[in-house]
Length: 198
Image (cartoon, rainbow, N blue to C red; front, side, top):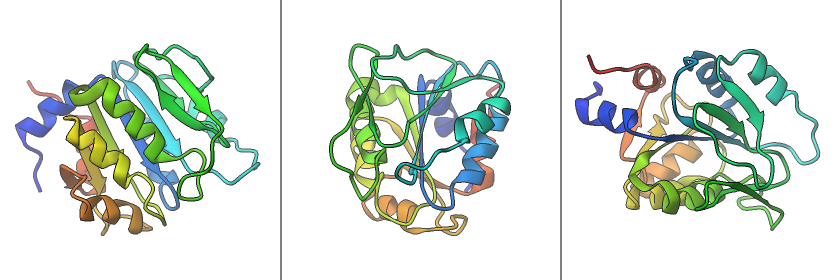
């Protein structure tokens, strides 16, 4: 599917980009972080499933390869524009209406903490049509319900094509629920991220 003007315009008008992924998504999300220009002028929130109590060098690796400010979410932190935030392990990351993050220690969702659903659902009420969300590869259904809520609130919602996903269940679940406004290949997703209208 070729990118259309409506899709590009909705992306460019977004204030926040939500990225959700699990098994099979790391390399693609890392590539995306490396590709963002320093002046993207959007808030980027990345929610990736992590192993419990597993020390991760993800933040360090991402920060060293990002042209944007990048850090792990802290509780009650003010959400800045033109910055990349990574949801920490063992907490759910929520977006509050007063422009702050909050971290929650409640039960895992789809065996995952952070849960993509929790972040997506909290962002839906705050950002509505000013949001773009992309759901990548994963081995469970986390993110599908959150993506549906985002779509119902007017957000631009994208699922990675299951053909391109290492683990197709996560994006396929979103497609099955009609949560994805668009299903894009990896190349189309990167083309969108880097697009501009002359």
